[in-house]
Image 1 (tube, helix red, strand yellow):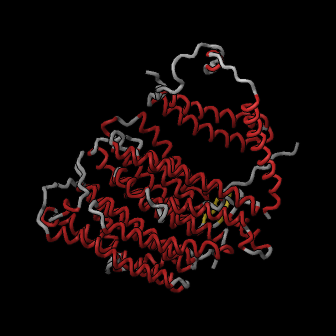
Image 2 (cartoon, each protein chain N blue to C red):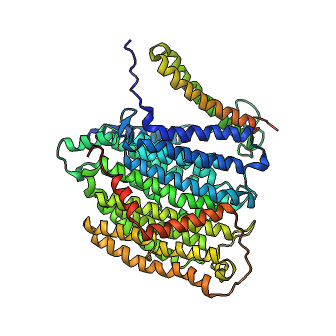
Length: 118
Length: 488
């Protein structure tokens, strides 16, 4: 029964082989003349300032979390817009319930001050 | 383009679930907008009212039977009995929390809607007949419990407990999702009945069904974590100790009951043909759980940790009723859950009565001489300890008797024997608490703070524990009738 999945295993093997092969060969055969500029971390042409790992205000985390809610909302609304007519009234009710739950969450977080930056 | 068919939906079948969810959502807004900070108890009373209304809504459904949402959700008497059990657990938890939260300075209105959401997800689990819906229920339950575990926010132990539970829970959810994927790969469905129909269609050799076995194994791991079976139990004592005590009480009975109920449905309706695989696995888990849970409790001097280990061992006992998968086994499971819920919630309520603000009274010494100071508390605690140990005439005795008989009749005599032997071990550490309360002099003056809610809670739990122990027949009739198929 598992024999059907052998091609996937082969594909996986090929992927690993190519990745390892390319990196090893380029490291062994390629010319390596490093200058300070070449060896610096790539920051889109900017001069690097400080380490990349540092403390970030936790507020960003809250913003990201709240953003996901509305992101998901949009993901559901786009396909719904496409089949709006076909779904008819039951679809409208279903989306209404979905939207109401979302609005409750939004109103709650607004009231609790989660949207205030300071 | 073809018109899209929306499957017919019968909302009456999920009326209790809808009621409690809607109540929780509205309560969340009412709490945020209308209830002032110093009167958050009002939110608790409203939550209790919501539980009562939901229980009433469920009553006329007793003679209704059916499934809806493309057979993803079912309503039967089994799920209804469980619904009432969950509502009772939620109610007792809220009654405990009403005094506990302000005393510890962590009173926030969100606590009560969160309990309602947790109960709603447990009701969903009792009614679910599709692996996806079960996953949804488990996730909703876990999400609320993560927050509740860390609810005593500035307290480090509570945060630690929440973090531990979150990380372990996330792993368990991953196992569950992967298990669903493998089972879907093997059988082409996530619906429990459809899985069984596929397996029953033609004879197969179980050991050759690699995908199926791996999938079922992954599901069992998740349930092992949720029910706290050994060896997936490591988180339990830490989380119960760190979590606010009402939450620990809720988790020790509520989560376990919901997870066991859905495990029973999965094993019974999707994989009865694979019992050669899961029966030995779960039998060994049950045996090890009973042993390790009781032996672990022996050495504890912290009563809260002792109750955590005791809840592990009780999960082992209940599992006996689940895995024999006979009608008597299911009855025994329902009865045991009810008896255990009342007893354990009562025991936790006594622990709460002894807890002071910013001071934990969980050591065995704090129970010394309790009888002289607070005879009511001591007697109630003695009843709960006797019931947990399985001494007659308490509910715990009847429950253990019921489970062991079911296991013996179902051909699991050796497990029943292990259960009996480990119960004998358990008597030692339960009675140690009782002995301390009645014989020793008070070590240090811990003045228990009792209020009406806790008082009522403890009285109710102790009274029902004794009543069910003395007159078990009404409850036995109820659990027997909750298995009777309709129209018979």
